[in-house]
Length: 73
Image (cartoon, rainbow, N blue to C red; front, top):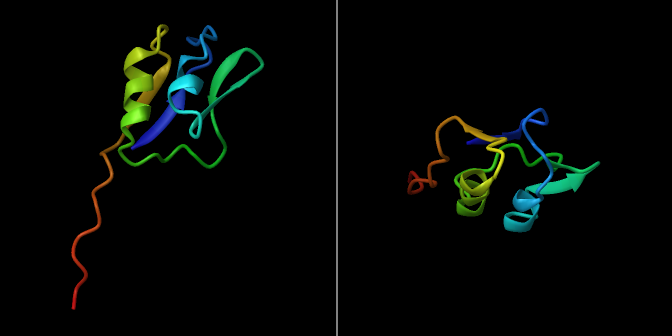
């Protein structure tokens, strides 16, 4: 799944950076997705950050990542 933060909605609670610091950071008083971290798979911490964002500024789009299947052999 892909994660993004709408800066027009974000009011800087930093809740996202607290809940998933490897994906989000706090820059210029706003939560942002760290460079290279927009594709998060199905990280439960990112889902929690989106659900608990007080301004509802975090969007999760696309299907959750599927776990790798058994190796063909």
